[in-house]
Image 1 (tube, rainbow, N blue to C red):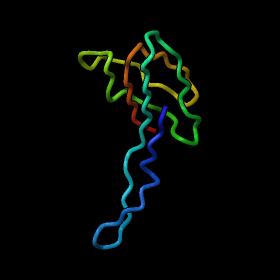
Image 2: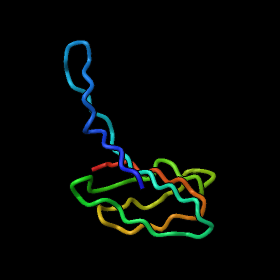
Image 3: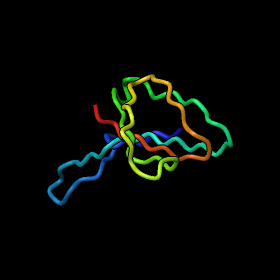
Image 4: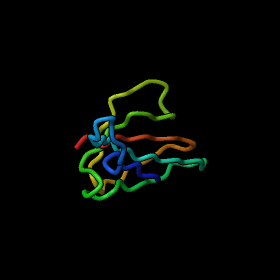
Length: 85
């Protein structure tokens, strides 16, 4: 699992205003069996939605994950969740 912290960006525009981005969790799972991942605690984000799931041919109505939730990831899958709260 990899956490990408959009709030930690320190880039500024030509006027010196700071920019931030979105935060993401990437679950890389190469094993041939499903596995369980635990979402980061609240200080990283309270709620996470799926933005990419290589196990699904098209977007499905997946349930959002809350901080600390256990989520099951299918075999040989990349799952990307975006922080929405």
